[in-house]
Length: 93
Image (cartoon, one colour):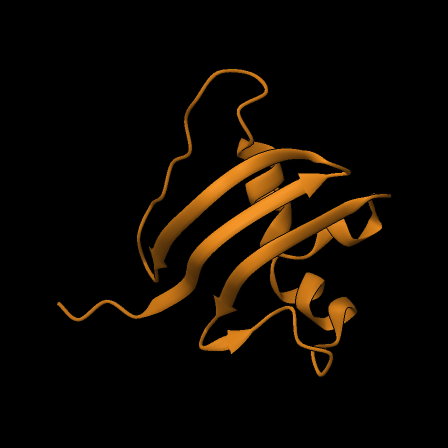
């Protein structure tokens, strides 16, 4: 079975101010599959998930380095309509 890539994350580092919370994340999430994120409280699971639909844009002092592609498109380009992106990528925490 040929799985299509939905998310491709490359060298993602994210920060709240000067505090780095994600370090060099490389991850591929495939269509029609289940992906689980597990770890202790405070390890960055929610931060990573919030990056997938740019919810962290709303957090003061948040910034990131690295790339996140959704179905082949870089979600952090200026051409992306964030409202449309959030309509397509829903979140359940």
